[in-house]
Image (cartoon, rainbow over all chains, first blue to last red; front, top):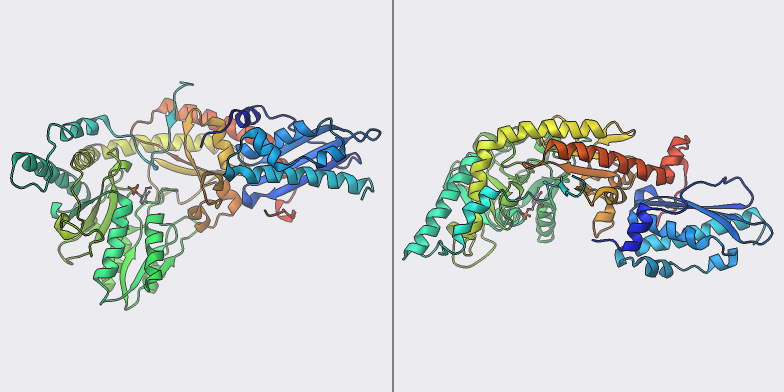
Length: 129
Length: 405
Ligand SMILES: Cc1ncc(COP(=O)(O)O)c(C=O)c1O
């Protein structure tokens, strides 16, 4: 199976790899997937207290090229969005942008789960229901 | 070097040796005959070429040329052997013993036999991939007609104790079939000495062409028969109908002849290169060899690089190096390698495995390049891996509640 140019680009030059302080009140962390399933994504967002805009996003992913590309793309998309805007990111947007084949759709689903889970963590920390 | 594609996937298939190709060429146009055409020189030339190949192949495995049945490959040979014995020996019994690390051509054939009312025992393997001989012996019953155990495993290269297995089968009067696909032409195999009654193998794993294989069927003490699975003109002593693939068979024969002459030197050279590759890669932290390292094919190593996913890892170097992974992402099923799981590896380690299989055309320069590229790839993937980070931070990965998906 050949990979799309965009997957290859994100894979070779992953954006926003790293770790934010998960104890920080303004940081939300999502850890999804399982080693037994072959994918684990950890996605983190740092939200500006005043504006509620996501000012930083970082990821680390254990997985195939498409999983890495999906999470790398997600961090790019998250930066600059408000938390509410971020909630509207749909996995099919990722599929389209990266031209993922059907067998790799689960990578985009996992990326969406990671986004939702990071936001939920942030909201729980900050008492937002 | 950087632009050259290095092939370390010789267990999937081998390149056809140029000497084999050269031997085959005349049999496409110059000598186009059907080996079954008994009435003219075209047919005679084809038949003679097939006879020569049959000798060369029989000679490689210590058989008589009359004991070689040509097929389209090991898959067909496995099917013919197992289904053929099951049908032919129905009056004697309906129980077959095999093991969980066999190739799908054996396992799925056995599953089908179960659906048809047969009984199959799947022996488990030990942590190192070897079967337990006592368990094998204990599994043999009055209605057992066949034991089918592969010679060498395609994923790990682990070699089963065929001689001891042969002795157990002989003692109990049970037929022994072996899928010898990965062993023939690479290590010495003598079916008579090992007490093997049926053996499947294929040309394209030993520097011959694709689409041609053989089934060895013992003719004396005991005289083994299999029920044909393809009906037609009655070729191959009635066991496999269909016009013989003359150029393919000629190539198979040539490949067998070369293997017989060069196997020892190839194996010696490749085991040195394999050890170099393996030792180089084991320098990486948290990397482990899968399967027994003493009873193992000389050109194969299967390594798990912990906390790195195999397909992702391959993507870091697959512009330059071709290997295989036990990762689920490389298969349609989304299940990681059943062979590695049978060895007791967790799914996570199976996902992290890479099989390197060297071959006759592998050079030391290529191995050096591979050590470097794979090491860089593993380090790159670990920099990206959240589980590697947790492992390094001393987090107990077992304690985490993963969200299964
Ligand atoms: C152990 C084993 N058996 C059978 C086969 C099938 O061989 P063929 O491709 O000739 O049908 C293979 C190759 O994939 C193999 O490794």
